[in-house]
Length: 133
View 1 (tube, rainbow, N blue to C red):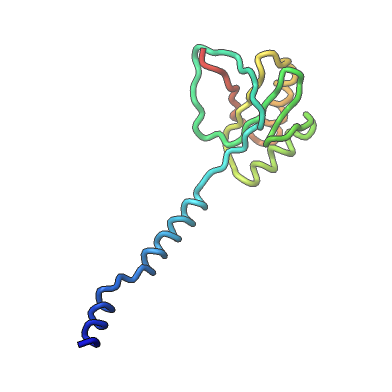
View 2 (cartoon, helix red, strand yellow):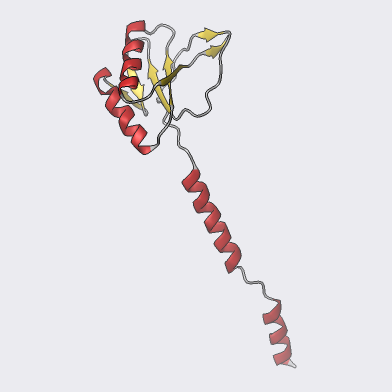
């Protein structure tokens, strides 16, 4: 009688191995397909714009502060090193658009130099971030 009860318990057990395999495969899939955004690392006081459009595929952000500092990937970068840093970030994760977050009091000349450096790195689509207004 005891043997019969043990045999019934063995047959009623659920094998969890296939379910765990599927969960791990899904986890690996989500890790591989995740896109990581390279934010500038600082907040700037963006100018207001009445007409603006949202960029969906941008992964790289460059910030220009009002005092002329340029921030990329959460660290300060010299204007001469912007193109090299963008190329490095593009090698890690390709993108078609780079967004510049320029402070409303930033000098126009510095923003133009940053745009030239981004174009030098191989990006043709550059967007300027603005606040809703």
